[in-house]
Structure formats: C-alpha cells, structure tokens
Image 1 (cartoon, helix red, strand yellow):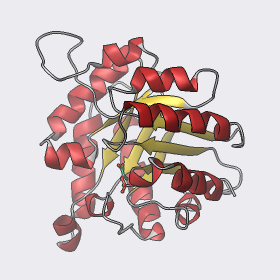
Image 2: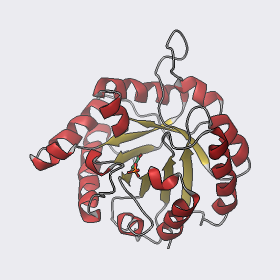
Image 3: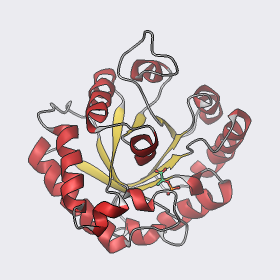
Image 4: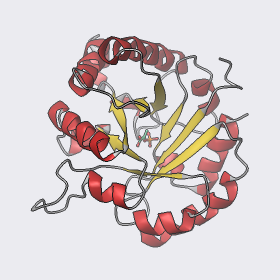
Length: 254
Ligand code: PEP
C-alpha cells in the first residue's frame, strides 16, 4: 500500500511534561486541528493519569482518542499509586502503552510485568500498544534482533488475541527515545518488518500495526511513515508542544 493511501496512526505520549491545566489547554487546541486531518489519520493522546478526565472533557465530540501511559493489572485494591486497566476503561480510554522504555529502564518493568499488563488490558477491552526496543549496548554488540524477539515472545507466546482487537506494536529503540538521536528510517523499517514476521509466528494471521518511536520530529516523520511496515509514530517530547505536534501531523499526512 502506498504511503498516501495507508491508515496513519499519530500517537502523542505527553509523558510527565504537562500539568493539569497545560494538558487541558493542549487538548483544547488539538480538538480544533484534529478536524483538519484526513480520515485515514487516527490521533490518540496519552496524558498523565491526573489529566485524563480533564483531557477527555476537552476532546468531547472530537475524533481524538485517549490512551494511558501506564496501567496496573489488578482491578482494585491496596496498590498505592497505581491506576488499573479497569479504571481507565471506565473513563473511556481506548489505548494503553505497555513496556515503554522509560518504564522498563527507570521503573524496572520487566517482560513478566509487560505480559500481565497486556492480559489485563485485553480483559477489559483496552488495546495495548506494546513497546519493544533494544538498548544502545545491545545494538552495538549485535544483539538487537535477539532482544526484540525475546520481548515479543514474552509478550505474546500462547496468548489468545481477542477477535477484532487491534494489535499495535511500537518499535522504540531505547537509545532513540528522548535523546534527539532517531533511528535511521530504513533501519526502523527493517526492524518493523522483522517484528511483523515474528508476531505472525506467535499470533498467526492477525493484522498487526507497527509504529516507530524515538525522537520523531516534523522533518523526519515522513521518512518513517514511508517505510512499508511502519503505519505511524509514537511521539514523546515533540507531541507535548502544539507547534511541533502540528508540524508532525501536517508532515505525516502530506
Ligand atoms: C516516547 O515517549 O515514546 C518517545 C518516543 O519519546 P521521544 O519522542 O521524546 O523520543
């Protein structure tokens, strides 16, 4: 499918960049610009847990979907500081990031946690956006492919994927996230093709969508979207500012 025809996913991970008022304000601005996007472009924003409901109110009536940055797999109980998949589902969240590199490296989330989260999200009807990627030393020592394949196996082996549920995987090399050092688009495309082959081996014939994430900017987004097996981008820092996110949206659908 040509880049001009394929469905494009534009996912904005606001991380911990915006407070409550700033999150609402950006959502209000995006509600206006979202209507200018072609129908084949789907946008989702991933605000902090604190801002989720306020952002939802601002986006009411717009096609922009809501995503959570992190979830916990138990529905409710004595888990101080956590927010469950079920709680996000109850306020209309459609997507949730799982295994983001900042969760894996700073908060020591492991492949077992990732799997628990995926299962809990599927059980409540939220689509996990499973983040996969190797660190710089792993790339340098030639084990990048082995690492991402192991992450995929931990996430999906013997998992019954619910019929009709989207399957979204973000290739986010750890060394490219929040560093200003993006992966070369052709290499990101090659890694996504490898992930695609592996996912087919693990889950069978389910259409999977692959996003690239890591220092995406208005000037490089088009090069990622043009790769055959990349259908969109997961953007952090540049998505939390109206100007750069508008530039990314415009360049992505050109
Ligand atoms: C991310 O948070 O998923 C991400 C890719 O961050 P950044 O765009 O800032 O590199």
